[in-house]
Length: 167
Length: 167
DNA sequence: TTTTATTTTCAATAATTACTGAAAGTTCAG
DNA sequence: CTGAACTTTCAGTAATTATTGAAAATAAAA
Image 1 (cartoon, chains in turn orange, yellow, red, purple):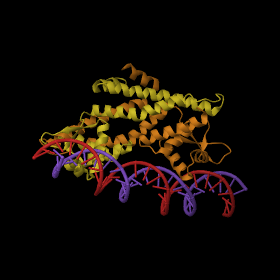
Image 2 (cartoon, chains in turn purple, blue, cyan, green):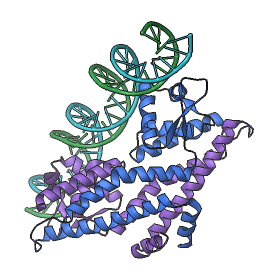
Image 3 (cartoon, helix red, strand yellow):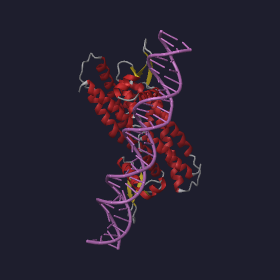
Image 4 (cartoon, chains in turn cyan, red, orange, green):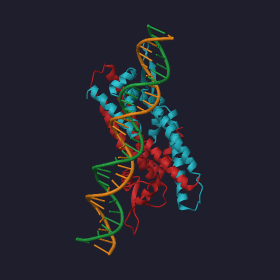
């Protein structure tokens, strides 16, 4: 496969994967573009490559910056803003994990913790089942949370190395 | 908090978490309802509880069955279909991981593997950067894939136990 | 300061995704 | 068989989510 085709296919693949995991498709495509760019890209570069509007490009770039996956870079002698992505994939994975933990897991964890304390007749089958399930879920989410924390602190080779020794 | 309120809140929480991770909100809500149900539920029960149409309830139940998270259960002396969810959360997690691996990770993995073999001038900065990134991503996805495989075979206490010894 | 370049915002609109409800299909008791 | 009970499908519609583009805001240069 030729480079140009491969590039387009990567952008599509990354966009599709993102949208399957609840990430805006265009945001994932902008990320893909920056991941493979050997030099910083401007908003206009991104608009051109993905054929999207300035507003769309701008919003998704800001969002990628919020996710700490992309940062601004000043190109000397140039007023325009340029953007670069974090290129180390382990670091990328850690940052995504960290953001999703903060945005989605933690709130769910808090909610489950409260729900575990539901009042009610402990003899009632429904109430019993409910509390049992909330307890199970709460325990599980806590363990997943700790796993992500371990990952966030860990160095890649050590993490997977240790993990694969388990197998 | 009273049971009725807690139940509604759990359904909302689970639905929200699902939709944030690319799962149809209603499907997640049906799942929530079945997770806390002490007895099998009929399509009508679910329509009533979630205030949704028969078509919607039916489609989401089928989809949950495809995900192997829910199964049909025949209630003797009754023609109607009843549904139960797998209640062991570790098992639920394994099945979700297994399905997402199959549906989303594997295809991406295959695509990256092909893209790594992109032809082109190896002196060209863009081509060099592209191949470097595809190689990194491919390696990473392979490791994640293996991790999920380990998890799928493992018993919960052993898995988290071993993992937490790492910390 | 004024002008010009650039970024941000957001109301209007488009695109996508999800839902309804009734008709068609299936299953089973009589 | 036949008909009632129940399930599935899917065209039409509703709801949600994403995008555009132009005006407002900001920042740098003249």
